[in-house]
Length: 296
Ligand code: AMP
Image 1 (cartoon, rainbow, N blue to C red):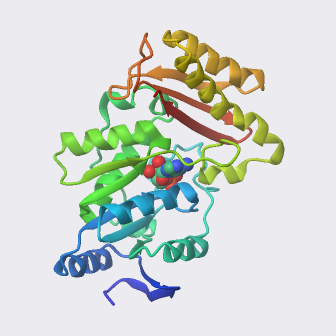
Image 2 (cartoon, rainbow, N blue to C red):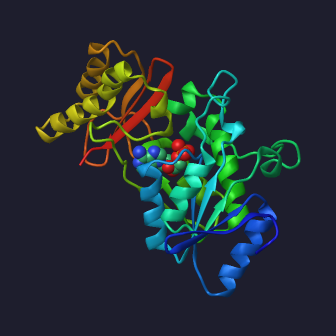
């Protein structure tokens, strides 16, 4: 086993999963896999895994021979008033799930390992794509995200990395970072996995009380209504925005934003056409929820 491993390869069922805390340990393990001619896929997460994360792992398995899952709650992407301290964590459960999915390596660095120099003095500036939507409500968030993703790309050096459409703005920014910085990684984006009732899966859903489930569902319901309106011929983006907004307000949910934006530039559009994205964010109780849908 390579240096930095905190466990001998864990064996569950047919699969064996190595768990590594150090960057050096990851580099060793990746080097061995490369020597065997394997291609590498990376799935970056903050853990507390759910079916959405698992779908990314499945896509990673299809895209490459050797799958790395990273679990790191990145302080750099949380604002001072945000939920860093209470972000849900259950490493043991995550490792069991990763192992059942036959992940080859789980990278679980501590903050000190990830930011070994004491912080990130040099960071990745997201530019204008971060000006609106989540970037506007969470100043510094995307700089933190891009910085940690760039670091993970540097540590793992994957051929392909998988992200979720659930975080549409994030995925768009990561694609743009890879283009603008000429990073040698192929970025794939996987569809949103939902609960049976339509709620987009999120680690933060665990914060929701049973009573909050009903207002929380207005996000996915409002988006479904936008899609239905569009499919019935409505192309005025303002009508879709207003419909989305009203769906949330009808259940007493004050939207943080509702918008209908171009899928590439994230700029608001006047006309809804195929590929345009309806986006929404709102706080339900103490839980911040986001969701989106790409118009068919
Ligand atoms: P997180 O652990 O929340 O940072 O998410 C890690 C990755 O999983 C990101 O690329 C997310 O976009 C993706 N993800 C989160 N929720 C879902 C979901 N419901 N469906 C698909 N992907 C998701």
